[in-house]
Amino acid sequence: MVEQQVAARGVVDQRVLDAMLTIPRHLFVETALQSHAYGDAALPIGEKQTISQPYMVAVMTAALELQGDERVLEIGTGSGYQTAVLSKLVKRVYSIERIAVLAGRARKILDQLQLSNINIKIGDGTVGWEDQSPFSGILVAAGSPDVPQKYLDQLEIGGKLVLPVGDQKQQTLIRIVRKSEDSFERQQMMGCRFVPLIGEQGW
Ligand code: SAM
Picture 1 (cartoon, rainbow, N blue to C red):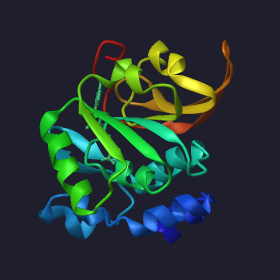
Picture 2 (picture 1 turned 45 degrees about the vertical axis):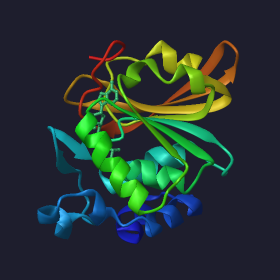
Picture 3 (picture 1 turned 60 degrees about the horizontal axis):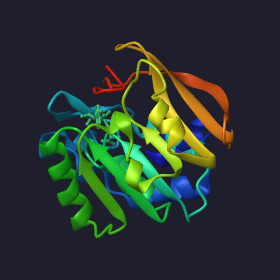
Picture 4 (picture 1 turned 180 degrees about the horizontal axis):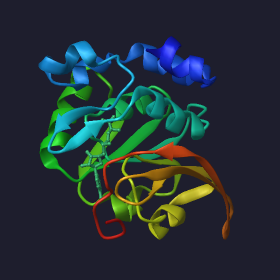
């Protein structure tokens, strides 16, 4: 999976590739789907939600240019797979999931894997996690109609935000770097398809 779907498509961040090699993706999907866990696709995880395509996990993670001492915010814990990858790359991961049953399932698997640098909160992630801000990186794993202002506010200077922006069917992956208190550099990365970001600042 890592060699053929991720590295072969140009993800070069060795730390990201190594982190993905260490996380057993099949544990994050139900038993009946485990034989597809290393395929090149998103898969259903129940509650009408999905575990993201491995390549998309890699691209979004690499876009944060993580060095190891960061505190990052993830919106949309889902299965917990992306959370696990992030946990191998940073000091602490703060992850928000609006569906309690998914958050609970993810917590259990992450605990089994003894990944202890993760805080999961159940709630509306469109408002970020103010008491833990600012973050060096914010990764949003659901499609938003626009860039929620709270994410920009909760990004430290030099911090990076990656999120899909568009309609409910198709989005563009956007990367934003906070250059100073009030200036942000915005870059379009690629087309993508995510489930909708539902909440106060989303759909
Ligand atoms: N990256 C995850 C993984 O590897 O399994 C997949 C995330 S899935 C594509 C998107 C998740 O975002 C869903 O679990 C959904 O419930 C969640 N979500 C949608 N809107 C949200 C919100 N406002 N706050 C928190 N989570 C939200």
